[in-house]
Length: 470
Image (cartoon, rainbow, N blue to C red; front, top):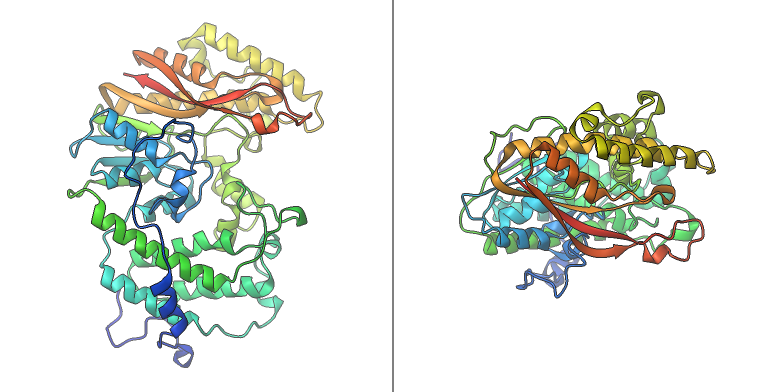
């Protein structure tokens, strides 16, 4: 419920600490801060090598609100929307919605979209990124009021006040900077505003966490060791810059997005289970599922979830996130959960020849792991991946219109040097489920930067788009 106009914008009894006067420093910050105010008019690259990466989205309005290195380019979504002649009556689905690349791009182009996401924190990010219907005057005032209040944080009371934070956070920030981040977080929680405005403020703080940190947080994971340290940034300054940058982004998309108001829905659910969508109503499916490369999506958001108190340990991350996702990392494998024949009976019944091919790869990996120091369960990771992905493809097939296309940005893999042609295997499985055809468009080679690593295989991998035609 919104407070009356004469009430404090905070739920607090300590009214003497609230300073509503805007300092000259923040006036200048708002006036001088320059952000990119337009998306490139070009919708294509001279080549498509970056379609499978998040690089273009790092500087694009809305998309850049959460840096997700496992994502793909919004320009690919634009290309596919154009190539398939979608319009305001069309519907797009992304079964791995992630941080909302497909949904945001579809909304900008006036296309209705549905996203499915099982990661609770990333689902929240996507939801927040897809809401743009703010009263911009009121949002501006809320930002101004919050930043004015934050100008006078309480004195740092000592390290004891930070003892409830997991150890990882103490390695990523100085005590003083972590205290300021906590002050910002707690101030947002007590700030009286709409739910959507609060989410906007929290997304800004989320995006500030890695920028402000002294740890190597530009990587997919957190690297707080001395070899990856960078200069720590003042949390309050980073947060202020991020807020105004996001505000600018909203003014851009409100001015340039399609006239019609498309319907955008992100659902928090298991992508292997039936979708809350009628059969055969989707015109195009676009996604980038997890690659079979041992990338732990749960670990990717550990910093953020620890900071917001959504998890406090590796066990919490496993229970809340890791166990909910399709299998693509050895950290998800519990060997006791698999039988002697780990590949699913469904795959055997659909395609006995392919079942045998994948099973031979699994057997090779089971032998290789016993010769390796880490003994990583790549064998069961591969089995679990295809067991899960066939269920995803089956669900997407049900909601696609006849003749529609499912486009998947994918990479092949070679765990322990055993080559897995992921696109081919998924394409062949799709044919057994009813898809009429498949083809792969290569985007780029992968793994060249590791070619001098003597501990890694020397197979050249690639990234491409798997197109499935219903």
